[in-house]
Length: 112
Image 1 (cartoon, one colour):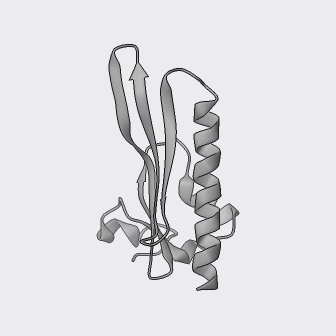
Image 2: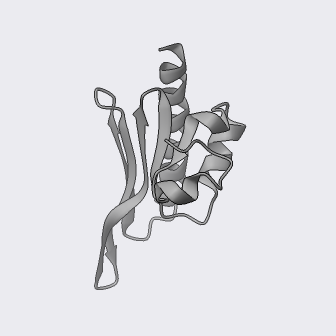
């Protein structure tokens, strides 16, 4: 469980940093973090208006399941898995959930 608590902190800090950078733009699109600690679901989403276009959707979505971090969605250009590793989460405790299981075995991350 100590690892899970560490993973929660890393994820929350990462998403908060992304939200802070996005909100500094002050262009009508707000970044919001959603932290569901009971079910270990963590999300960064964008919401607002870009001229007359509605912006709403997840940018990064992570779960913690069975003491592994599942990267379920990455809508950034950044390699979120590598960032998580650099912050202390071992590669074998990260699953790239948006890849089908048969592709995961070809990554440097966990299969499931």
